[in-house]
Length: 527
Image (cartoon, rainbow, N blue to C red; front, side, top):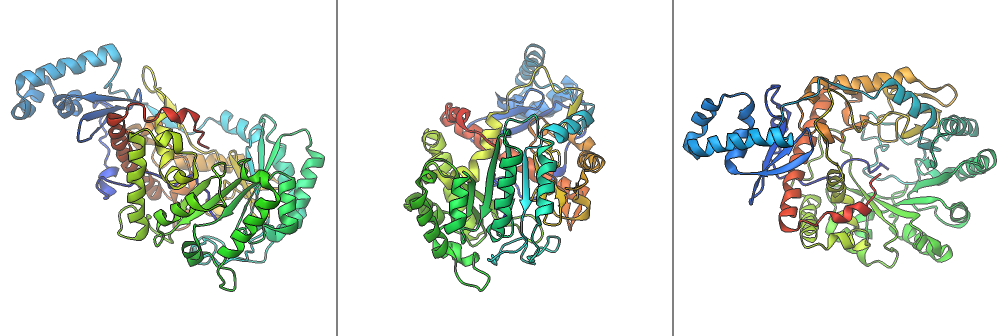
């Protein structure tokens, strides 16, 4: 089971060679911009203000040179393509735009820094958001793609190890004593299959209700659904749990990978449990507290899965779907570039997604189950970019990373033995340990991890055109062969630049056809 905070994006249309996206021009005289084009227009993304400007072909051609070449050199260089008069006019337009609108400036921050010690300390002391208790490392399934299945050498494997009450209570006390400034907190239960340790989950909930009755605390659980019945179902419903059920789609897709420990298919049992659960606790059909998680592996046909989500009587629009791409044992997932069922179905659904944006339908339908796959797979980067906001007059001289996750603040993942990690997605290696439930989180270790993140590309970030809207804030992206490495961070950044270029192109293509296409995103909350 994995979290859906990364992996979704735009199918790559640009050159797939990451080397092309690692080469950033490092010249402080150049305007801080990124150029891109559609079939209908040429555009400039202005990094300092986060604005997109449509420009003439001649401005587009000469703009990058305008900071490092004299006017005479520029005219000579572009004379054959545009003529002296056009280039001279374009130079005047560029100068006027810089002076009057503050666009196309060459300004770059002098430093790109990790969050301040004060911010880190405040979040860790008083603003911790979610506790995830790994209540058991055992599972009654043996899913072919599971990161705990032995194919991923740097992850733990299934074991009978279960969290003790002593560890669970210490984790709860440690977490809740450091979330006092928040209105809401979340305590989640994870595995393995967490319902194999239902007595501990029940004990945790009862303890929290008794000892922390004055705090607003929500409970959540991720389950394979095989034990969602009887006593377990009654307890979860009574306590208003947010329940995330792992279900990949119809039986021919789901049973290909998600089988029980003895190799039996699991779809029939899970859906039978769901039907009985919804019949007994009908509020879960409409209260938004039942969601589904699907893992898209390379043999999966997403079109077929989408038909299942859209037509089965099990689901309602108030539920929802998260999609995670299968984690491969090594290397970059290449589903967007390969000729497999997943890649082909992604192309079809992505085309439908873009067409529905262009004709205005997606804004009315993104919350409907008929759009679950498209919303889960493609919507997030468009929403985040559209909500980016503008900056004025330019980026600060000392810029703090915008979206770096402070390890242990947004989430604290506690393994069965009581060791703490940033979340369930990072490699559970010694290097990533943040502390223990008995001793608390180690501020110096967390600061060291953040420094590693920053120092791995601190100078490079000064010249990166994604700097002002960067969402590369996850430590899980800088792991390589079980270690945090500078090379893995640079590769992740190159992939991000490539995907953001493709997003800019598609974003403007949509707006060319429908200027109001993204007005609906004001109602969309992205966690």
